[in-house]
Image (cartoon, rainbow, N blue to C red):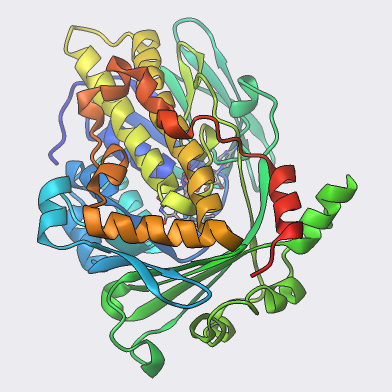
Length: 448
Ligand SMILES: Cc1cc2nc3c(=O)[nH]c(=O)nc-3n(C[C@H](O)[C@H](O)[C@H](O)COP(=O)(O)OP(=O)(O)OC[C@H]3O[C@@H](n4cnc5c(N)ncnc54)[C@H](O)[C@@H]3O)c2cc1C
């Protein structure tokens, strides 16, 4: 994408240099804005390994002129295969070939997190954004005709104040700026993720892996896919922590290390040997306790301050769209601001309201669906057999209509602004309640 000048003269401060903040800096700088991004860490880096970027995310990269580079740095899987984790039987294979690309307009990409972040950071710099490390945003105030932002140098601890037209909080799930909207806590899911990467060509057992493969099973799942043109194997092992559930049922605080290595070693005993044989490849020094937050009804802190990305809508990871939502947020903000600027000057209050009204229902639906989709993956007993048969039916009768709302989205269509009810779960599922205590009781009763 070439740079345009609709936002020339607009000064924007972004807090946070993850995928969301870097995307925001790029999308806004491409419209001519003067962007300064502050990242608290000394370097831009992502913890973890693979990211699945569905066609809705590739569409954003295409807008910014980065799709081809991202595709050559990543890998285009042939299918997304779902397998029952107990029997290893394939229950659904979603073909990412010609028909998929025609339907969604873009391919399904998997890419190393650091490779994607580096691409975004480099492109944002080239587009003219100023990216500053080791500086923490500690507060922001709307002063009517501008924002004042308090920043702290992470080395000297010195605090100073800078000004801009707008402050965008892409400061992640423990966001300082989100607290101006709501004083909420993360919602733990009782699930924990172990990750690992290893050389794919040196792994004869995995020869021929060309797809995203997800084994879904009672209280756990296991994901595998190639990265970096097939040079790297990415694996993610996720399971429900019995110690977390036990604390919940006893009304006690969970131990800090719930999901630790002892639990990991016991967690996959009921699954296929195909999974058990792979667990030695996982990193044991770190694990991720999975949590999301309840959806917000509004992201606008004031006419000049907004939160986005995980700061606004941290999801559970099951539909692989957290980073993509942040990219969509970035592009929506830049696009709607540029559209507004074409009328003469930018009225940021109107822009931020429009952006929030479009994005809140979209991200709410993704957050709610992620919770439901994860629970569906992890069911046991008769529900597991019904789930498997439902997946087989989707294979027989077509699955596009289940995925269209997610993958066939373009913020330029302003589709949730036009119809906010699209942000709800489908009517047939709306009664479903995400309740960890109920889930814990079920886990207690059911075993394979
Ligand atoms: C196991 C797992 C698998 C996932 N898989 C996928 C996937 O396949 N596809 C997908 O799209 N998403 C996936 N996600 C979700 C995705 O990783 C996140 O939603 C996304 O990275 C959020 O980006 P962000 O920039 O909003 O926040 P973050 O990545 O949290 O970035 C926030 C940044 O802000 C900085 N910061 C924080 N506070 C301050 C401050 N006060 N001042 C300055 N800087 C600050 C932080 O240091 C950080 O760099 C997955 C998540 C997990 C846990």
